[in-house]
Length: 136
Image 1 (spheres, rainbow, N blue to C red):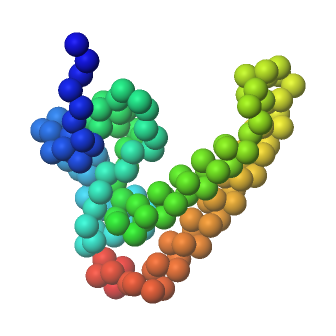
Image 2: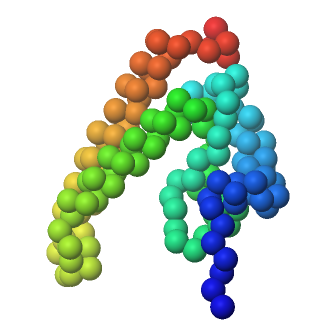
């Protein structure tokens, strides 16, 4: 018999997730790891999702405390990365890997640099628009 479906939002109420969430927030000093905001509502961000893993089963090094603004930016960046990956021709990463890997890594590094720059600009813009008590 299969596992009973539990909506994701309901899993976030599970005591195992609540413990993991608290552990991550404590590790990060109850501050956003991007902008260091301690005043805005905080969330724990999953660096990736994998089918079959429960929210509390991810390695701690792939979870980060983010304020709502930085979480929104990170979510948009994930969409950008998925668009980049979506342009990789099927078979490129699984074909003759030795011939294609250098090009694949170069393209990925260039696009990640663009994403990092865009993220820094987004965070700077947020700081100019909405200074928090933690930044004043």
